[in-house]
Length: 307
Image 1 (cartoon, rainbow, N blue to C red):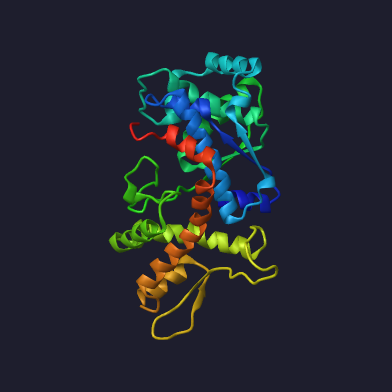
Image 2 (cartoon, rainbow, N blue to C red):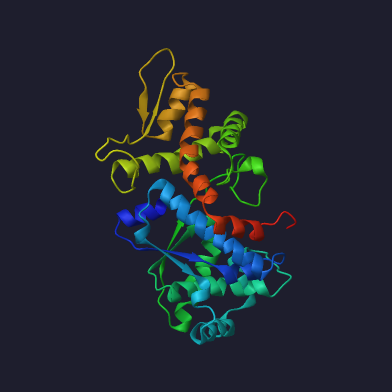
């Protein structure tokens, strides 16, 4: 979502697509009703998260797949794709060696490729896990007469325990939007303490890929910030140092790593500051959820305890 702000800074209009049909076909466990409620949760979460970091919402367009996927034109184009795409190309779009048991996931790469045309975009943006789906679109969209778009990939935020952070992974490996503040602090402290190397440290990734970019965009006036007009915003993280040294404004993760290594910055000070900064952002999301009965209802029915 920080990338959305960077796109806006560059003069790009941002379209966020909510894929309900894709999500329904891609899973074999949850009903269409479950998926619809989950899509509502995602919409509310995206909006609250964008508000939390200060992205101007009037520059973000949220589109639901259902606004076009039942039109005769879209169905016709999907069948046109089905006529020219080999089965192996669909499997490779997901993962080399992928052998789905069901037909439904085989339709999903085509849905995502056609979304470029039906959302009328010039660029498709996603994580590095989208590489196969992007390649699918690059290969087949021109063959049915549609323009080949640019496609950008972003590194995935790592898990607190290494590897990709995912909602399907155990609770201790990720930070959830609704995690209480003490839970967030505990997860960050444990993640930092248990990391074998700096490369596997998910806390450093939170700072490098989330907190520092947010501070810089706020200081540049790209992100809206609560507070007095004209109030100076630091471009980095201001942290107290050991032995009574004056606090330092850190602009890069490398500076932080260095001072941690030479003991100029205490690890407990660092993890507390990171947890506090993350919790300030999540406070808005938690409060938005608490005040939104429709969001709570969608959460209840989309993620029932029995599921």
